[in-house]
Image (cartoon, rainbow, N blue to C red; front, side):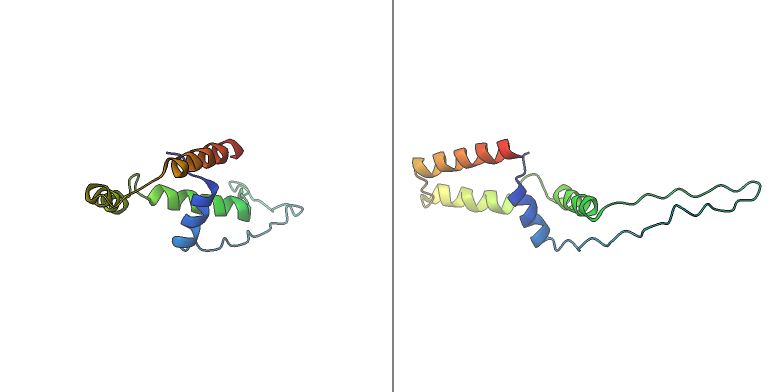
Length: 104
């Protein structure tokens, strides 16, 4: 399943993904004082962009692979004869999809 940048943006908007919080900065210039048997704690700082990507990935993973309601609506339109698509529209969408896949 390929997901375009626009699809990720749409998911972020529709899923109301919370804005990432700013990571806390840690002053590494101070050395911790340790007694026998203690160890210094390690910490990791994740950038706001990485947090945003993680949230978008979780939102995408939560979506079903097939949107049944959309499939059923299209199936009903096809069966009733109300679904008309021109060859020009199909060609335009194919070119757009190919272009979007190349720039990612």
